[in-house]
Image (cartoon, rainbow, N blue to C red; front, side, top):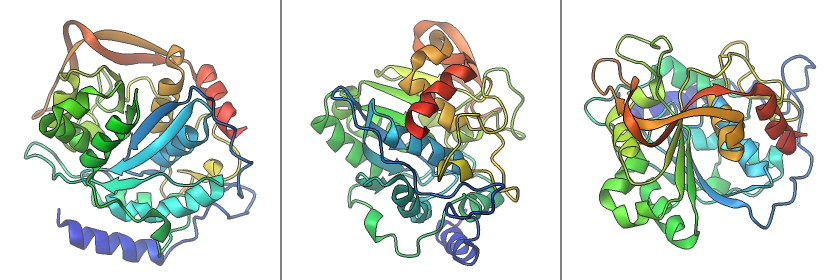
Length: 326
């Protein structure tokens, strides 16, 4: 994929079609904003970096983590291997305005995909930008990325915040880069919760068990084999459609555009599992990742520390969403 060309195409399409806005008030699909005031943070709020490719359900997960009282979002990183590159940062000013929240530091990825990885379909990238449910901000000044790469920002935050977690909602390219280049900082992470892979669900495409993993499968395998505890939310247990708890101003519009409707809110469920682990049933073990034939296919190989989610409690997740969204 020619990334500069794709970025230009995405920007042109997005700026010419901002109809799918969080402030739309047609009474059917979109929920007008802004949201109510953000709930007060708990003194024990857990510091989190969100590693995201900024697809519509990622935006819903970002909103949940930013607004939830038990989470302190201290950074957002964006891999260049995901559904949207840092072009997608133009969506975040509208999201944070709608949430009435200040954005944390943001960094763009510094690593290209490995030779085993496959780029997301260009139509998906265009659709995720054009029909997100937010207004594209042509002047993303409030979210000018850090001069640090994604992995460098995570390393800095890991030194600054004891007990830092990463909630990864896209390819694990930059998280694995931190593991390889700065293992000391990587070991300071308290845990990683990742939306990626598939156990028994049908493959998304030939050679693609699941796209977040298939976009860069070797880093996914490296993180699962690494020294930091990992919880994986594969696509198997996530129900199709928007959950009942995703309602209200701003968040109610995310991924709802019928021109490019989000089929399931995997990333929102992943954020919910991070906040409330009891909402998930998991199988611990060591897990092998297919990196060449059915990219992202997970297979348990023995006892171990990686927790793969096999079932979700939708009612419990809706209660988590209600805490943030009302």
